[in-house]
Length: 335
Image (tube, rainbow, N blue to C red; front, side):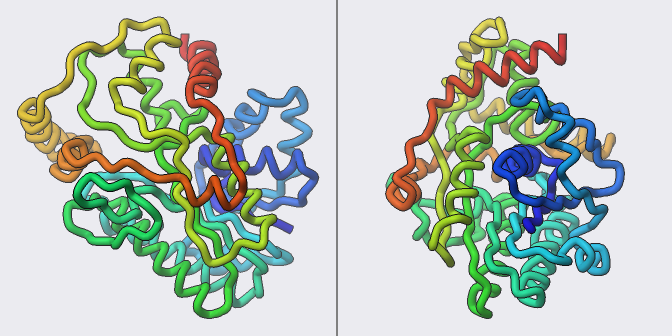
């Protein structure tokens, strides 16, 4: 039996669909107040028998830091996909990020060891890949340094250290480091905000860019790695390194909005950061622009996907096909 943590997120929901379609017996964790109906809706994007497929999943209410509930979730499990995480780049959220992303992962690793789990797949981020120097591409071997790193990446890197600890204690592990994940159904969360932002038709676009991957490709890679003999390895999972100008240009094309034509200057971003800091202080809203986020726009990394392509003889799907599909779903649900 397979356990998927974070079954109500973008990665978890699409992974669950793939697993039940493939005939696996699956259990998934969810948190209090999670919207399980949204998962069935995601299934319906791809399959007319969404309700039947959704009904095959055994759902367990479990928090990553609630050991008794996790003990229940681990009963009879042989393989674990750890997808659950909190995403925030606001420095004031460091403590909760550490509790969920780092301590929560430590709890998962400890239970995997205690229950003799055959293999663990941990979903990390390219944010946990060390920065490159002198314009070199970023690879899995880059040395990690916390300098100029956002709080989310810090806690995800620390989570990877817990996974490597598990491997040293005999647990077979795989870590995937995806770029920005493009997929439908989560328009107000994480990467889904790209669609919401593009739909507003802003004239400006931020400088820089990053690595992107479709949700379908990420799920294919994860399941293939779990079925393979590969163990105790990490893989950058990025299909394309794309500028934000190009990404927003593709999105606005499929959303029927004007393409942004003006690049934000760094002095404008600095002014925006100050206003964002004050707005966050007085309203409690999470920070959206930080010093580290601005610095990351100045020193963009290009991510190398050679390792995963060679390991699985893998070919990535074009981003634009998935963007078109996602934009169509966004328009159906938001207009």
